[in-house]
Amino acid sequence: MSHKPLVLSGMQPTNTLHLGNYLGALKNWVKMQEDMPCLFCVVDMHAITADAGYGKSEELARSTREVAAAYIAGGVDPARTPIFNQGQVPEHAELSWIFNCVARLGWLDRMTQFKEKSGKHKERASVGLYTYPVLMAADILVYKATHVPVGEDQKQHLELARDIAQKFNNDYGVPDFFPQPEPVIMGTATRVMSLRDGTKKMSKSDESDASRINLTDDADAIANKIRRAKTDPLPLPASKDELKDRPEAENLLNIYAALADQNRDAVIAQFAGQQFSGFKNALADLTVAKLEPMAREMRRLLADPAEIDRILKAGARSARAIATPVMDEVKRRVGFIA
Ligand code: TYM
Image (cartoon, rainbow, N blue to C red; front, side, top):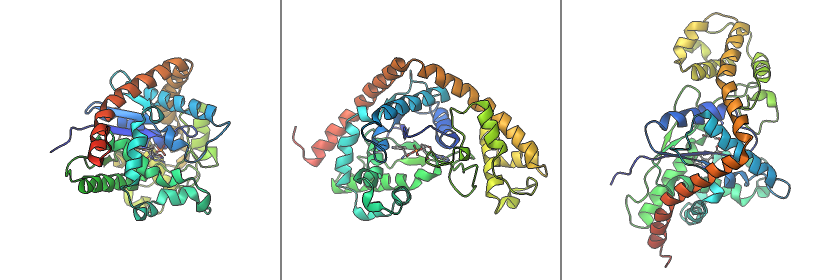
């Protein structure tokens, strides 16, 4: 049996979204929306695995609306594509529990993101942070989604989702019940790096705000961060072979190519032999031209939080209409009587 194509992806509402989230994920979601039905969630249940509690709930609600606004400002059309927050679709949590009983400890022990996020004090991390990738598998499979557009850093989690799907199908003797979801990692900026260190991923959790371009940064902040971005003393390379061991140059060229929708070789040829200062000006102009209208639209949307809440609610209703029959069937297969 083949599964109907369906796209699902999501982002965590922790801190502001950045250029990596846009180029690695959101920009591709908007493209995929033209070809396949899509669902995009704001993963508020994932957000509480790390930083939660009294005093943080307002912040979580604010970030959830901000991420939803970014989806819409970036080009996701809520009239066609449900946008919702995970916490309002209880089937994610239900399936996640069943998957907790399918996934093996050994599989989770291999997850590199848990090791990075839990740091030296693993015993103090929440249990939720450990089982985070299991919830992510449930996010995808509760809709039997087939395609998952993400940045490169989510590849290992997608492999786990495929293993969980396979084991559920085997354990319950339904060979093709869940699909094998495909990671869709596309474009030239699948791993956008920090502006301060080309060997580190651009990340919401980096202490230095100068390391990332936030989707809400204004034109001056964007231009300043790009002008101050770390580079090396050489001129820009003339070929991609010369990018070896020049992670900062590679990162900035990749960002340019992704924002301009050009292939990387064409961008290398355009700036070959030039100094970074001129290239950085061109990159700053391009980044401002692409991000500023989006930031403006985000501000406009966020001025009417009730409208965002209405979109999220309608999205959750549409999402549940897909998830409920899948969950009913899962419960029947597992042996939970109705
Ligand atoms: P999150 O919130 O960390 O990131 C959201 C998306 O942005 C991509 N991304 C990047 N891409 C390129 N360069 C970067 N520096 C960069 N930083 C982040 C991520 O790959 C991701 O696509 N676990 C997920 C959220 C999630 C999810 C899901 C995704 C929960 N359930 C189901 C897909 C399907 C996460 O933490 O993403």
